[in-house]
Image (cartoon, rainbow, N blue to C red; front, top):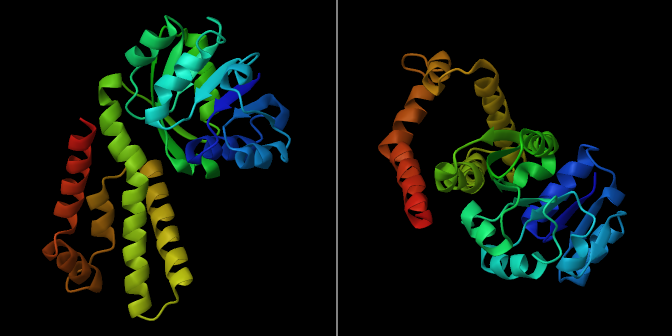
Length: 259
């Protein structure tokens, strides 16, 4: 299998890093196109095929990943539509670009829409996936490849905006929590990097606990909260300061922006 990744920015790079890290593809099976000579030089040094021409890059690829910024997507699709053949599978990572938008520009073809996050780079992303005009084999092929860089969740396209907020923007929301814990950690005696590592490992362990046990968060909270204990004091103070309300409000505000 050969793939083409159009756009070597944050998302495109995260995908490449994750695939290489998982040994899912050899470097020579990946072509990346980008207008930046610096980006192309970085990947060329690692053995990837590179091109400054999107139209040239898609030739010969079994799967074409569109990883450009939303305001560039239409121009790029118009650029490649005469070079991409009907048998090639087009996978869009572009937020806000619908399956119908892509079909209108490129014609009827197998299209898969994916909303990932940058944790693809460490094989721990979560990805919402919808498709149009794809066979079960095509869906399975993309799912198998993307599963190397994280969790794949098939969803109806009507949920894509909601998934973008919860699954993609969610990375930044979680990082803001980590940053707050680092600040507090410094106040109670830790150096910033140690506070970061402690908090990140707590999040990693907690996430693993929920994913593997399918437990409700409140069930796990009850296990570590004792009468008159320090955990409940901390939780109550956070709620008094509006922690849960702020999170819900922030997610809803981001969703309204998407809509």
